[in-house]
Length: 403
Image 1 (cartoon, rainbow, N blue to C red):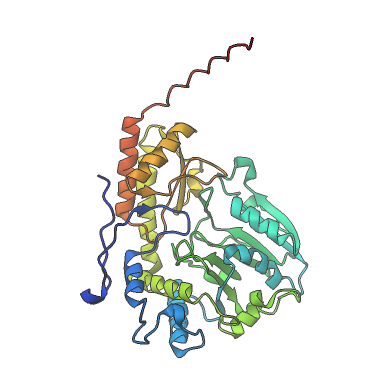
Image 2 (image 1 turned 45 degrees about the vertical axis):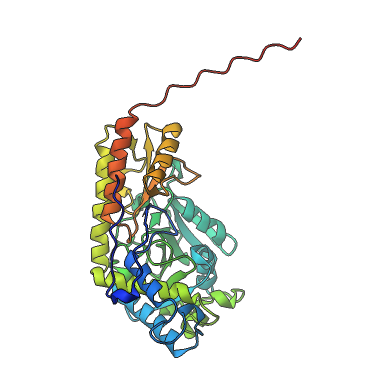
């Protein structure tokens, strides 16, 4: 009734392709869906990568074969971002959570020891908590008073003179707020650092040269879980504090082409397939157009529901990636029913984060319009069948007194 995704076929011979499996509409906030074409290519290459007689999982990271894989992965990522030559790309372990610690450890040497953070949700709060172990943190602006449904105006930021860096999170996965595409202005000489985990590669970065550091967990728009991508301007590589573990020392990792230790080889390979897929689709301009079309379809459905569905986030900063919404204000009983019935209809992972409740749909690069159309059709059908909140259950009669 709610159509599943049509199978996609990469440019591989038919005898190398397995039949397309049953696929649900996956709206997970991460790890997230991957393009079926990418999964099928990985499946076809799984046992024997390009005639080597082994899987990428089995390759030495020092082999010529694997060196070609990681080099092509980096090359395609640079092409997607139009990345200037004076930036290094690092493929690291620890995810964005690890980067919360490695950011201050790699940017504080020779500095004031102070850093400014803009707090717009759970993940920027978490970054602050980790950074406080290494430096003096100033929360220069926060949207906590609005329950993280807004982004503080740039004019209200109370930045610290001489701060080593300013950190912000471009898209808050849980709360569904997203900064504009343009980089915020910071004082000259201050390093701009951005956690782009949940909107990385979903749109072009036209002023990428304004950033000192960009980092992202791969498991949303770039590939499977297990990889942090750190993009750092070369002139910043000498600022690592002496107590930084070598595994997170960006200068050492850059010297060793992200292979100071054994990297997450298969995850990097999968990211490479994903990057190549994005380039074939038209690059980040195409990803942005798709993201706008998907989000518009859902936001329009919500706007047309006459208040049945609502979005708590202010319109000016609503995310194209993660869309939280509620039913009849905060009707938890209907929301639970929605999640269960959606799951039966092949629409998965729509429950909101446990810290905020409600519902959430995540539309990353691999999400198809067919999936969003199926979700919208289900939402309209659910509203028609459940137009009002259930009647409160009568209070239980008191137990008879004991004799």
